[in-house]
Length: 105
Image 1 (cartoon, rainbow, N blue to C red):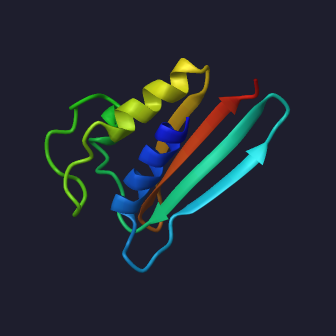
Image 2: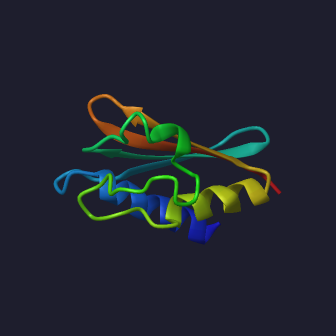
């Protein structure tokens, strides 16, 4: 889980403006932990959003810092492997948000 969270934080930094912090919020729910990671700055191109977690689905760079590599795909698979869910969405003003639901062991 540490690797997945680190990968998502690093990805969020790539979408954040240099003068904007990446925000992370954790809340315990009845049977899960909800983690939100948000960055203000750039959004994911709408045509790339549905395939964001697919390995190598995004062939061109969508952030100024270069391509995303395998980090989002690996994070999504790690979260899913423990029974969790991971979603990404664009924000307005431009930015992104990751929403994770992780089961409580």
